[in-house]
Length: 101
Image 1 (cartoon, rainbow, N blue to C red):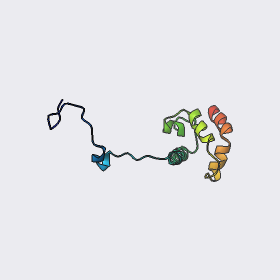
Image 2: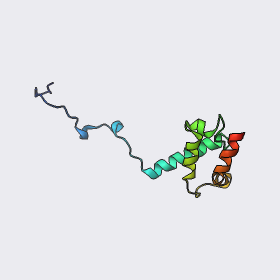
Image 3: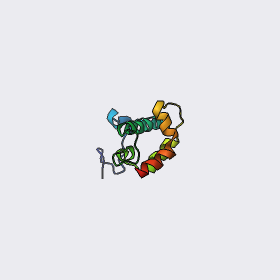
Image 4: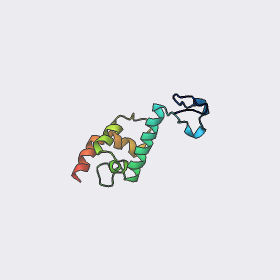
């Protein structure tokens, strides 16, 4: 393969010639965690805080209920309010009761 000058060799892309659309934004881990938490809370609110239900939050998020519970248990209690906080604190109890519903 030859370049415009007729030289044979590898064709490298000049990184300074990137268009703005080609640049990817790097998102810090703290922001990824915040976005994940917001998405999980939105799914929980949409499903009336059900996790194991066929229309529950886990199904909406495309993860197993145990995976969702595991992710939620890692959250610090700060940032949750009212029934959100009590729901997260009672995850083991809710997981068992929802299985029998």
